[in-house]
Amino acid sequence: MNDEAGKPAKAGQAAKAATGRSRRGAAPETGASGTAGAVSRRRLLGTAGAAGATGLVLGAAGGAAGYATAGSDAPAALTTVGATRAMFHGKHQAGITTPLQARGHLVAFDLAPGAGRREAAALMRRWSATAERLMAGRPSGEGDGDGHDTGIALDAGPSSLTVTFGFGRTFFERTGLTGRRPAGLDPLPAFSSDHLDAKRSNGDLWVQIGADDALVAFHALRALQKEASATARVRWQMNGFNRTPGATDRPRTARNLMGQIDGTGNPKPSDSDFDQRIFVPSSTGADGPSSGSDTGSDWLAGGSYAVVRRIRMLLDDWEKLPVDRQERVIGRRKADGAPLSGGTETTGMDLDKAGPDGRLLIPDNAHSRISSPEKNGGAAMLRRPFSYHDGIAADGTPDAGLLFICWQADPFRGFVPVQRKLDRGDALSPFIRHEASGVFAVPGGAAKGEYVGQRLLES
Image (cartoon, rainbow, N blue to C red; front, side, top):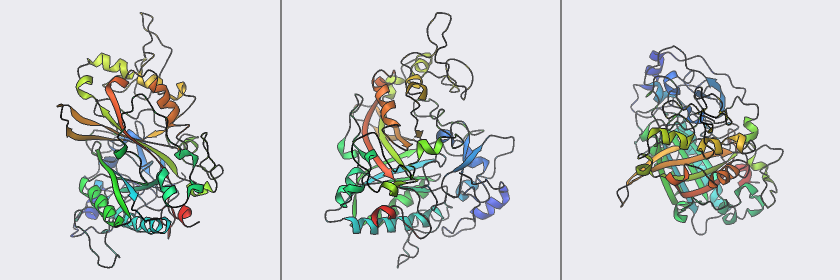
């Protein structure tokens, strides 16, 4: 968190760095911001879903050095989108505080029959080596003996690629490590909006891939699937997207498929308690309020918990509502995300303010009211979702919605209390359906010469 952003790269320098390649060569050397000099203004555009209304500057440790506000400088060259690089090694894994990326893939694997701790360790070693190469903009097959690369991402830079790895509850049983399983992986309670498909939920291993180029993201997905080989098999896989960097005039909070600004109230790395809320501290390990002991849980220090939910949006029903009704369901203006109590998007909600008729301006059952930290004992989580669209369902409705991903130091103090409150009367509930779910313990970042999860698998 002490990293400093470098000076902005000139457009001409970025263009020179990102062009003239016949293969995916190494990206330009990065400064503390994790880019060729720094995160460009164009890179910041449209990324605020993970950073509220401002752009997140990516640090060399895979975290956030701070926030950059929109200025009057002109956007940098488009080629800087490809040149931007996230760092693989660091205190935290990339893909948690990294700004929202334009394309994402979520994939869960189950270990193959007969595969145990030794095979899992070898897989994590291979995956980490591949992720490190790809995030640096190098071919996936470099150094694997035959140098084979599919060529999917030839000529592209790293494009802010991140690869994030996590372990599910069942991973610990299948590797003989149940004594190291943290209490934060206890099963989530059932919620009334759940219509969960077990085949698309949970999993031994979880991988999140994000990039600002669709081919770069798919290249990483394919490379990791190949590296799994006979050790692990795909359990489920989901594809998501966000606004492309540079699509807006200035950094703006992302919108979801309901057209609502989504991510305004996210915790910020500049908050004094950000690390406490989002990352597992070494002093307490992964202790949570649920049952079970966390013997030797320091392997998770610097890591986080990801709660993953596939949330179907019933868009046909939602779009029948007039805008003023939609705004009362959410509690914010659709045009600019400002609370109905007044102000701008970043103005705090006045939950007690009433209109001339005596009614609360932000209704009792408004989604933003019920989910606010003020109404949940300060419970907070870092929401970093992708939208998805999987075509048209048999009944003619769009199979579309949100791949909801939230990060917290303890899901039983972050996600669960908020979801319980929403479950008891959220005005948005009739328009959404939770169709898949999973919770994954995401270790801290790997140091040089290490692989992700090494402190668990080799201790």
